[in-house]
Image 1: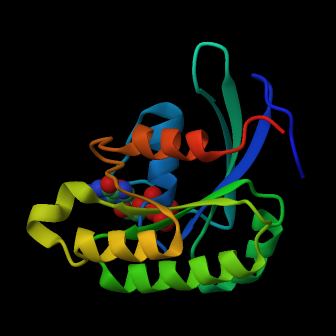
Image 2 (image 1 turned 90 degrees about the horizontal axis):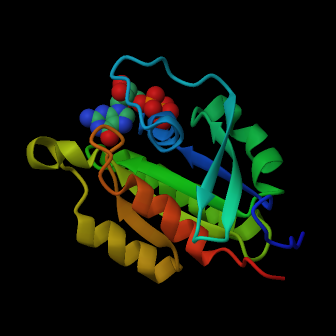
Length: 177
Ligand code: GDP
């Protein structure tokens, strides 16, 4: 669906990825600028909204579906991406398996999601890079480039690159139809 953009414009986007990679934490950091070390894992999907100013005249309202990554919820996924303008697929830089899961989500998205959807790959928990990095940035980045995805390493904990991630997505969305 095409949308005319003005400050009340609505873009649907959602967050996707394996359990405990930090999807909810990224959304919480973006929406409320908070971080909670002991938050409970998402059950099903949580719904949040946020308005992000693009420039002096323009803001885009996002509707955020933060879906849980558990296998048992996988069948719900098409419900979210059917109407999505953009998707953030998240992995945890300390868990190599979470990048493999992310790659399979991305494959499904590129096959099934609406044309023109903006997809970003986010390697979260960047604050743990020195002690526990298991995925090299260059590996994930070259995969992302190959697939035509935006790519950022982020930390919901320290807020590093979180605004940059959301802003880069906003800047890639077609604002005028
Ligand atoms: P989700 O299941 O993907 O939504 O993951 P959560 O947002 O529930 O986060 C899972 C766990 O990882 C929680 O204990 C968070 O506090 C922690 N976490 C999330 N993001 C970060 C991060 O950037 N750095 C660190 N060190 N921990 C994080």
